[in-house]
Length: 107
Image (cartoon, rainbow, N blue to C red; front, side, top):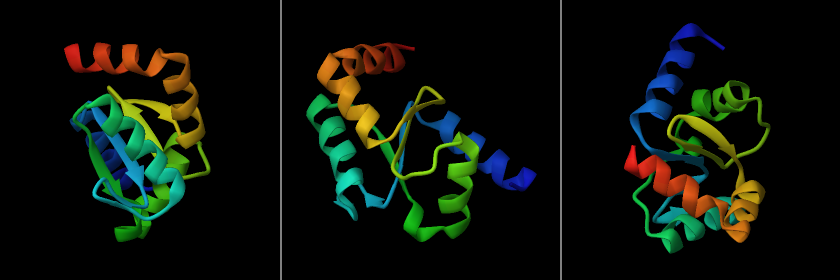
């Protein structure tokens, strides 16, 4: 990964309290896994931003290396990689996601 791409990803991740790298956007998810994440975050009623990896091949490949996670979507909360769709679903079902989001939004 180029230093420029790493810096760009660092800025994106740290610029938003809740950021989702996904296929499509929050208004029009382009895959089921991305849609799962959007539905969970919408249900929680929290503000979040999305980056459409289909619009930028460099980010689409780079984010996988950046997080050492092979799949999209990827969710970042307060600059920390949380995981993908399955992990977010699990955190939501356990009630841990709400606490994580509250802490992030309060900081």
